[in-house]
Image (cartoon, rainbow, N blue to C red):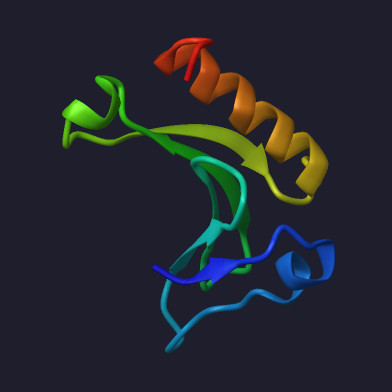
Length: 90
């Protein structure tokens, strides 16, 4: 899975790889993903493990459209979701 730095310009420049839907991991932000579709739609998601690292199952939480939520808002929301699911002490 390709990764992007948590940088506004890199996020805006992220495009499709091979003309197909691409999901980017955002470096330095636990679980934050940017989904880029051929239609041009960009959506923020949080990927997390409900059972912690013991579980191999991943779940996804949709934050929202990248045009509506900026990088800072997405980072804050991703942190909230991961803390709520995995506990405050992690």
